[in-house]
Amino acid sequence: MNVLIVDDDPVLRKLLQRALIQMEYQVRVAKDGCEAWDILQREPLQLVVTDWVMPEMDGLALTRKIRKAEMPGYVYIVILTGQEGIENIVDGLDAGADDYLMKPFRPKELQARLRVGERVLDLERRLKAARDKMRDLAMHDELTGLWNRRAFYEHANAELGHAIREKCDLSLIMLDIDHFKVVNDRYGHLVGDEILKMVTDTIEENLRPYDKVGRWGGEEFIILLPTTSLSKAATIAERLRVSVSSTGLSFSLGQDGRDEELHVKISLGVAGIEAGESISFDTLVGRADDMLYKAKREGRNRVCVFTLENDNL
Image: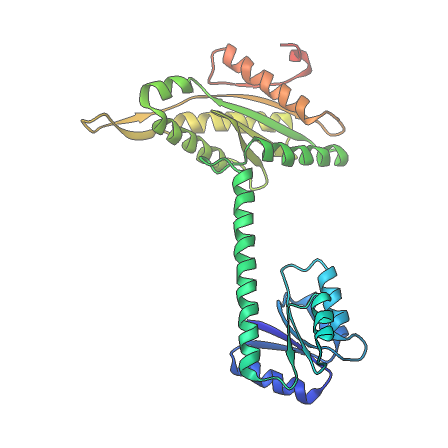
């Protein structure tokens, strides 16, 4: 682990450096708080051992500056001081230091205090990882791994705003698995889940890295296509329709172990904005949704594209 030593005394800096290297730390050194602050701006160091009394910027000023800054991770700070007395110790802790060590330092005590710092930093990392995981779970559909409705809405709404400002084309596809309830009723929900995952994989295989896909609800998916004209989006939707219908799902049926291959069909509705057009995301979704239901009414397994002429359909 990396440790930053901050001390204006070259002899003490050398002693600290030698002791920490023997403890198998990677060591960076600074002669005062200003130099230490410059280093911390460039490198994400999380263990700092700093002297209290230094020119330019002392240890307490450095500590306060670190605590006020938005650092990428928590910085554990040990104040090294020759100033005795409980009031001085309290001042250091109030400034934001996590621990203190009296001069002359003893290597074993320094090592023990840094080990405490490592445990604190490890706990902070694990808490952050757990928080990130919870945030990720809150934004993604558990079965398919796609964005859920709320997360997709937030990202797509921002993308639409960007397209309007930059006067770019943007398109949206609403996709629904035909007769999905029949599949669930006949084959069971486990097979239904496999169908949903198969459709998810097929969608992702046919899109660009910057296209956005979400599970809108149930067997309904939504796809945002930045910088994509309506005609191009219609071509992509047709490609998706063909790809899904040609991809079979094999599974064993019943206790006799017979294998069966199931093919599903999808209906798709497409809408979009042209360069210079300005509409809300809800309006765009409504247009694509209207076209999806038009495809359903016309027999399913097809693509319907929004135009102003069919706005009232």
